Image (cartoon, rainbow, N blue to C red):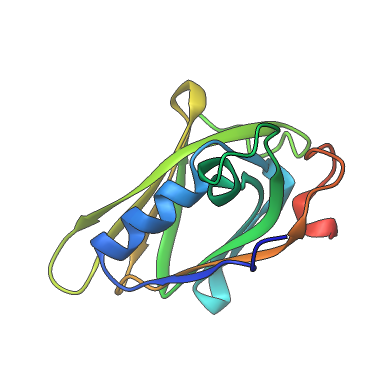
Length: 144
């Protein structure tokens, strides 16, 4: 197994790197955890191991990972049924739109037009691999 990935984003360029690593990740609605009092959003996911693919492996492997945003002032959704806890989403990527420095909005884009918009004091994001997804993402990513 390759080393577990741990990336931190403090600006838009850093976030673009994290976005590339979470492209096509599977996310269950139940694994999107908004902790308003802590100003934190955590998203559990089953992400493709892009490093393995780039090394020429023919069968794709998925990794359980956690994506965390801190200093989040608000979290808004569009075209996501947050009551449907078992619904699966495909994360297409993440964008950062700056406002008055250092604040801005992080936008998590999902297939079929779904999105989460996080208004942040400043960008603080972390992606951490937690292990391999031996069952192909059929259960909750945070159960690992």
